[in-house]
Image (cartoon, rainbow, N blue to C red):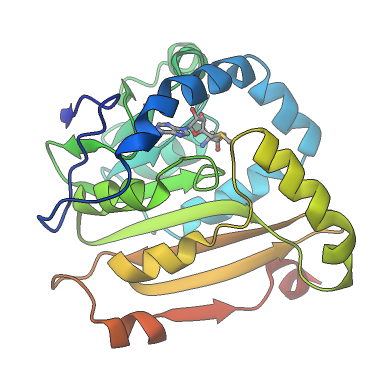
Length: 262
Ligand SMILES: C[S@@+](CC[C@H](N)C(=O)[O-])C[C@H]1O[C@@H](n2cnc3c(N)ncnc32)[C@H](O)[C@@H]1O
């Protein structure tokens, strides 16, 4: 399975609905700097996430939402060091295909190590800008974990990924979010600072962007004592872009995962 990527440092962004996207050109001069930052994080990313502990459980839920079948193809958008691979492999099997896209060389190096160690011959790592790429063949599903808050132009990334998704295909996003309630008063400024200082934005609400390009968007919160995350998922509509009215009603909010488990 191949893909075309535009010259992403110039950010010649592909618009899935045919028009030009305005106001994002200046972001691209920063892209090199950001990917350098992720190169540094890439060296310790797996170790950092192993300290968090709950990470795998949430990845698994995000993958579940894609309703993958054996032989399916998946785009792992901003795949990082490949921590989703084992869950995706389990679902799509050896006949399936996984495209692992990221713009950090070191993250991809770590991803390649996992591919080699597990002999996953059906994973293709691609070094590209998530907000400017074009898949040559449609995929059955798109997964994006912990990265919508990190990709500078996450709306373009969503559009590019939806463009490469087959009609009816699933799109699942796992990410951090601000904490609600009293604890939010205490912790949110700290989180906002940490994310801001690493060129990320925890105030983003990726499900709102998903509502623009996907149908049947659902969101489920995951609240622990210290952090709040969410999984949002939807499917590519079979007919064009949703109307504004449809956007407004296109979100079902499910009960908190944590609450449901208790
Ligand atoms: C917080 S890490 C998450 C990595 C991985 N998805 C995971 O779940 O472990 C964010 C990732 O997004 C990637 N990223 C951020 N902006 C990107 C862009 N414009 N194009 C491609 N990758 C990007 C970074 O290189 C990094 O690997």
